[in-house]
Amino acid sequence: MSAAKMRNIGPKSAAWLRQVGLRSLEDIAAIGTVDAFMKVRRAGFKPSLNLLYALEGALHNCHWQEVPDARRTELVSAAEAAIALLPPPRGRPAAAPVTTTHHEQAPVPAFNLFDDERSGDTTTD
Image (tube, rainbow, N blue to C red; front, side, top):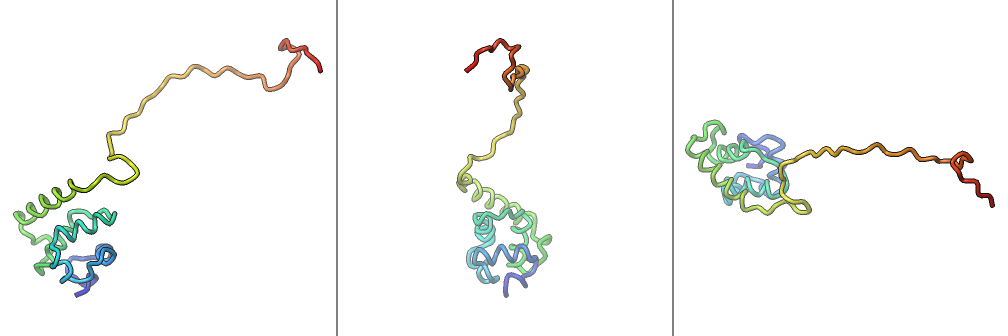
């Protein structure tokens, strides 16, 4: 069964799965729910936990909301542990709290843009 026709998997999720090489239910079953979710995440997409539940539901041929709470907790714990092992994004440090600093500035003096005889410059060439 292709990713586009799997239960619980919408077009956006199906596209993500195809892009990471998971084209069928068998492909997902071979690596497991959490590894399939992590493959999508490592590819740079931003899947929510709903994808995790949808993948589990697809493997068990049930609606994602029917995945038992105990199993959801296991899946979330495993996904969080895997996410914690991911390296920070390349080229920029991990996000930190944003702070804003306001500096008081003295007024900038006005500059005289043109030579003016009144300014005391009386030299001539």
